[in-house]
Image (cartoon, rainbow, N blue to C red):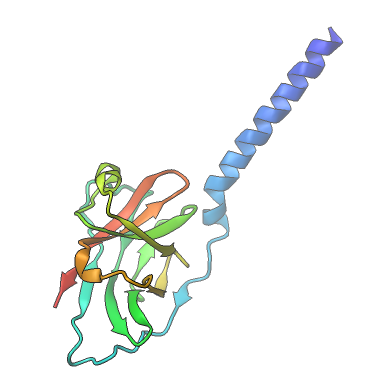
Length: 168
């Protein structure tokens, strides 16, 4: 009898610890969000000659919902250090764990599109859910070969937001 009580207590404790850890993984970004980013805009190599690539997050993408979303604008700026992907001060995303920025070779509007793109490149972990942020693209990455910027949740394999790259 006492063995079954100990086993029940141990199993309940283990399940409770797992449920608590899972709940904290979800709640942590809401309870303790990172400070808004305020990176200084990068200096382009030659503002007059440089091709500027801009983007605006799609507020009508089918993968968006009340939890998974990103808004705002950005640009890819050629600098002396290489190309810099910039999220402007108007950027904001719904909080969540482990968000990463990707460049995709095809249009992305939901998880299925993201997973179908074998040419995607992971750029960097998102610094903050709000504010101006700069990310130097890895050496050898040509922004002209990509179609979309995507914010992706690695922890849950969830689409957060995407923006089509537009060259000007």
